[in-house]
Image (cartoon, helix red, strand yellow):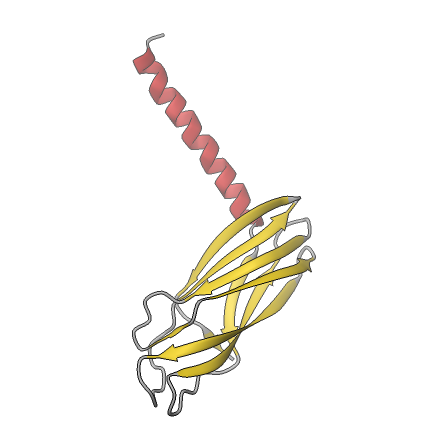
Length: 146
């Protein structure tokens, strides 16, 4: 068989194989959401404490061990969250949801503002599943204020 005929077949086989692996992995990836106990109050400062709850649900049939979480807030004009990174050793059983607290610092563009723009948050989660270290990145357009 000519090389020109083999190349598209090999490319198609690789494409199908990689798509199948991604679908299975995404079904087992933890479900993540972000919440905050309140809106940040800046007062006469440009910084304010803000406790973030990272809610993680294990959708896999095996336990998940959370290794680390990195949070950034790209693109905030009015306010943002100072990037933070925290190491964990938290085991989440199958079907269980745990909330991991991450104390953050909110930074405002000016003093005495009440945030009106939604906060975009990026969560970078490193976890172990079936003795493999995996990484998932989640993007949220809004933080839910409880």
